[in-house]
Amino acid sequence: MMFKKFLSVSFVSLVVLGLLSFSAVMAQSEIGTPENPIQVYFVPSVEAQVIVSGGEVMAAALNEATGLTFEVAVPASYAATVEAMCASPDNSIGFIPAAGYVIANNRCGVEVGAAAVRRGWPVYWAAYIVARDSDIYTFADLEGRTWGYPDAASTSGFIVPSAEMGAAGITPGEGIQTGGHNQTVQAVYDGEVDFGTTFYSPPVMPGGAWGIGDLPEPYDLSIDESYVGEDGNLYVGDIQILDARQNLRETAPDVIDQVRILRISAPIPNDTMSFGPDFPEETRQEIIDALLAFSETEEWAQSIGSEDFYGWSSIVPIEDSAFDPVRLQFEILGMTEDDIFS
Image: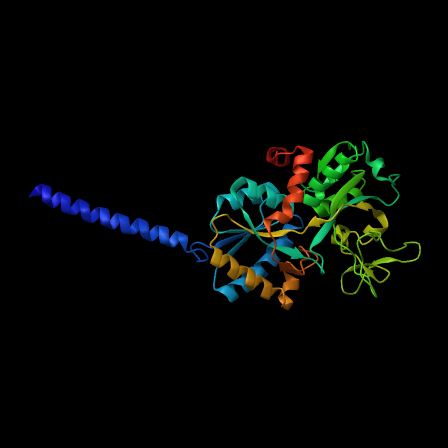
């Protein structure tokens, strides 16, 4: 009798424990709840506070559209962003550049969902910047010069320039990781490095569009004045500047007069909106659709659409194969994840 009673109690206990475990698993699987919010990670390519405040605007809009709960974070580095996504495979979204995506995809299967569009462009460029009065006038002049770059995992700030300089037989001097594109511009402005590499977005040209093959600086400073307009944006004459230098317009309004663009790189696939490898497919598409709708609202300009944030105009679907050229650059350079994230 005692054995039967023990068996009965044990069986009930096992059932209860099983139900509790099942409930816990189900609760964990229901992403987007206050108990299990979707983690939204942004790489720290611009000022963190700008990203956090703009990210919260986005999170609120997505919450209203989907009913899901989102939690915004800006990890300390590109590497930390990839690590965070891999650590949250079923509930993470990352706004990461091409190189970061390739690394995350290789490391834990992160999947691209969409790519940025900036003022009609599905691509962007790296800019090699120097002081306006620098004696660096050709690509070859970068040989042996001190180099400031944002982060070793930055596509436009490090990966692409490394590949291009390597292909040209150029070996720069000391490399200094500045921590961001803004900081790289500042380092060139302050004379702390001989040249820097940052992102380049084409300027807005009144009466016509900038095109591939045009000069990266389509103006003449001996004729046109650089200034911060009443709208708070940076201009040379009537041309609006959108490359990384414009992010210093408040603290260094003469940045155009002090920092010039030596050259720009070959086109680079735009930054991505990527998902953890186990992120539910149906929820993924729901969020992409909601973000696309959000891009049509005025609030978009207060979030990721702001030129002080990432300057995205919208998003478009993109396939993983679009990033094969970036993978090829890794192979050409012989670079591994450890080389980039060390």
